Image 1 (cartoon, helix red, strand yellow):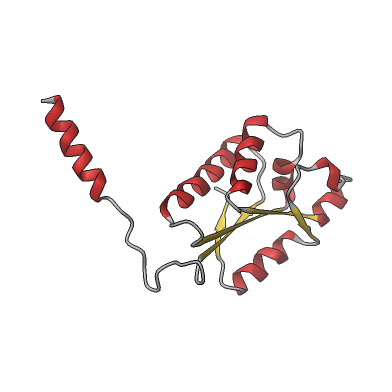
Image 2: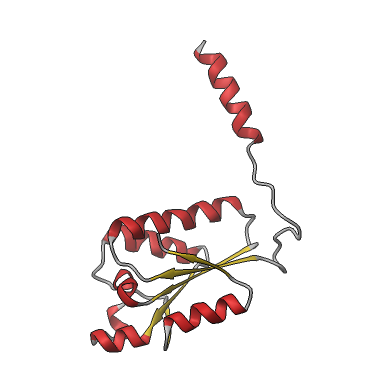
Length: 145
């Protein structure tokens, strides 16, 4: 009986593929997603990072562009002294070309410096403006949840 259930489950999962809308995502026409990261609590951040991994698993290589814009309490997530496991997951996402952008307005308010943050992130003056401009450029907006 266990073997039959295993065979049935394997058959179901082998046919459970995502059907992409037209035009299909390609290198020249990737899907574009911008995350607004404005919270710093570990559970929410962990869930959000997990959702990025899930998206990356579904799309063919080079057919997806993910940008994460951190501002407000979300800037805390990119600091070198944040949760080590989460920072390792973020660094791993960066290896898959997920772009992380930090808000200089938040940094100035909190008296933080660029060297307080992990390597590889870029900075913009106003994080929320970056999100708006990315959406104007065709990125789909996603909020940390």
